[in-house]
Image: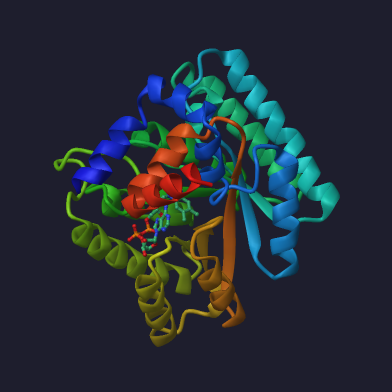
Length: 308
Ligand SMILES: Cc1cc2nc3c(=O)[nH]c(=O)nc-3n(C[C@H](O)[C@H](O)[C@H](O)COP(=O)(O)OP(=O)(O)OC[C@H]3O[C@@H](n4cnc5c(N)ncnc54)[C@H](O)[C@@H]3O)c2cc1C
């Protein structure tokens, strides 16, 4: 892992820097490149515009580890209303949630109940509930939560991280459930015995997992979603899908709002299903530091914003 990435991921855990950054106007200006605004309405308005261009959208309210079950309940209640808003506005959007936002650190049964309730609401409103994958200490519990949700709500999806050595085994174990998987590279700082340290190894692991997912997608044993901005990798995956006869509609590409938007539109124009994940909320510090860590050159955005 590069020194810039290591430092940025370490800084993401600092409460002091969190307080400093979120008070600085120039940082807020830089964050704008990655989120349309802090309010849910900002996200929904941006989503409606993207929908008119044929891009699907996913939404996530920023915020991670919570202090009380009341906080988790509030996050749950927020998303119940949010699903209703998507439906009311006719936006074909989905929702992506971190289990810690629903209180995973405080009570696994309560987190499971919230997920079950949100998955039900997603079904009722014609939407989809996604479960994000957080750092490696949460993987076993997140897989367990996903299994429970998926048993009753077949469209519910789960993110898996290609950088984890365990992921090929996790993917194989999920296959009997006909899983809906968003494959991502992985955004957290992990030791080398848990995750590939070199980006090249993660990229190779990603392509291997993608091939497994495409083979399974062909027989509808898996719904394959590729969450990456790595365009050469996406092109290789598309080529592989075409060679092996996987229909265009049988897989999707998901990217983050503000990153490679031109490529998102080009892929859409070429007939792919592309969805953009839009974040909102004021707890953006940790999330934003992970975005900087993915591309330390983004720190330049912050510096440029500092000078207007
Ligand atoms: C839809 C979606 C959902 C995700 N969900 C999760 C999750 O649940 N758990 C998890 O651990 N991670 C998640 N991630 C983040 C993911 O793990 C990676 O950290 C992130 O996508 C960067 O890796 P990459 O695949 O884009 O590839 P990279 O090889 O890192 O980047 C490919 C290209 O995209 C550009 N790029 C990448 N990131 C940025 C950025 N922040 N700013 C500007 N350019 C950039 C790079 O410069 C490079 O040109 C998600 C990502 C996406 C797109």
